[in-house]
Amino acid sequence: MVFSFFLSAHQRACAWKQKERQSKIDSLPAFYSSPLSLPEEKIHALSLSQLVNQCRVGTLSPSSVMTAYAKRALVAQKNTNCLTDIMFEEALAIPSVANWGLGVDSDTSINEVARERSLLGVPVSIKDTVNIAGYDTTIGYSRNVGRPAAASSAIVRLLQDAGALVHAKTTVPTGLLALETVSDVYGRTTNPYNQAYSAGASTGGGGALVACGGSKIEIGTDIAGSVRIPAHFCGIWSLKGSSGRFPGWGTEPAMKGLLSVPIVASPMAGNLEDLREFWKRVISSEPWQYDHTCVPLPWKNVNLQDEGRKLKWGVMREDGTVPPTPACRRALTTVVTALKRQGHEVVDFQPPDVFEGMKIGYQLLFSDGGQQTKDALMPGETVTPAAQSLLDLLQFPRFVKKILAYFMSWTDPVSSQLYEVMHKKTVVEERALIAARDAYMADWHKKWTDEGLDFVLTVPFPLPAVENGATEKTTLMTAGYTFLFSLLDYAAGVLPVTFVDKDLDALPANFAQSAKYKSLSAIAKGAYSVYDAEKMHGLPLGVQIAGRRLEEEKVLEGMQVIETALREHGPVFVNQVKL
Image 1 (cartoon, rainbow, N blue to C red):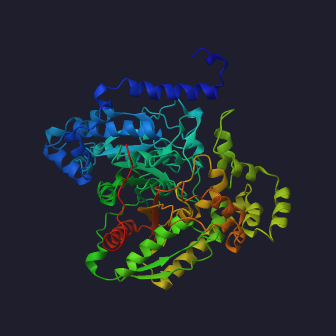
Image 2 (cartoon, one colour):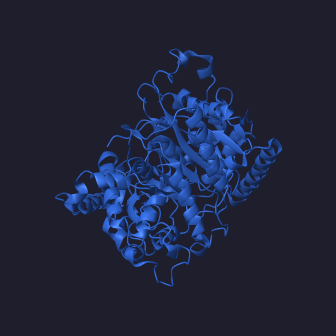
Image 3 (tube, rainbow, N blue to C red):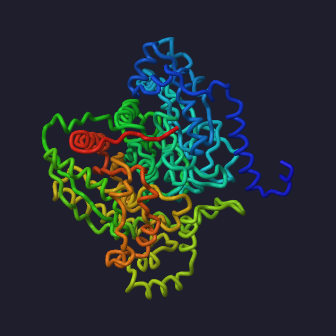
């Protein structure tokens, strides 16, 4: 580069990384750039279990699978900018895949169950934050460019032993604190349904890749909705488990040492069957043999439909901060109606004060005052406007925030309370918050038990995918619907239901003058200011289903119950991404 001498270290790192990525793409054999052939289309249409079965008996080669998915991955990259690294050839070189035609692998170092190659030939992409030996784990920070991981994470080692094709890493926003996936290192990742809109965050790259068919499974991480919000935005399926259920050792968090709100590795998939089958095969591979933080809890077969009993669903319609916009409310209502027609008991659920829980959670999440995020930034490096607004709030002098909170308390009590509490915590203050969190979790447990619920239903986010650059108006505080279940450490999944309809989902013409609008907090008004059903027409809409801690199998089965009800009494979601 002619003027590289005048670039900052941050600019040089970003330019180098983008050039490296493009060089890898350009050096690929020409056949990767051709459209899928008819046989490749048929391979791409196979389910996860079908891929594994055909590869294991030798009727399908992992290299044929890799070619089909690699072609789609490159199209996804061209359309959405979702990849950070590609490793198509490397995925085929690991022993469990390279020896695919030779029967059971004889390597005695491989876990006995994984040696059965239960994921042979399954293309799996990996979020940038998850370590793969020899590849950068940047977390969206330029300071991490050119520093490849020395060892692979537990989940990557398990996947490779089981024969999965770990073929790509996917984009994240700078420092992960965002509702859109954009960084100086990799640029902006866009929504596969509409490039003017966000793919979500922080696993936005994985959400876009899976929606485009470039991967069968994405391994992401979730602390406040980081796989669930992209699933909602991109029209795919995801399940965040409880801490310790899915292998997470070897993932790099943006805030090291944060234990008060668990960050968990979580998969995403293009359909529910593949998501369930993947979860089952990972747990059956005994992940506790790879990851000392995993609970040695075997897979439990749950079939709520065969039991024949009707389930009790509690519907949490609002989170106390931002009420759902019409499109998201309609998606939730669609599921509620379908379940009622199936004979299930569906009731409005009034949980312990959600906003009070959020106040506890936000304070724990940012108890460092944003210091870890700021320290990781290179001079000149930027974060999303929403993240910058939060960092600015955390750094604002406390006495000024107290004054502002006092004057806001009559007109905007939600914002007032956040101004009051969002500051760096002492050790004693943080311990008091952890005690408050534990008491809040106990309140939820009692309420859930007293009401005899099987599941809680909510929207995943109060809006559909938001326009690129608009998340400053929505703010990070709109993630309460997903953050709540991270704070509680409950299992929670997201599945797509329908699409935004410009006619059905429009706000009233005089909404900005209505009493409802005037009653909204400043946070909610900001979120509603970016809602436009006509412009958002055709974007996916999902729902969130939550079970209690370590009830992953039950939540997956609950997702199946919803899909069955929708097939019989409502719309069936069909991927409409145009490549």
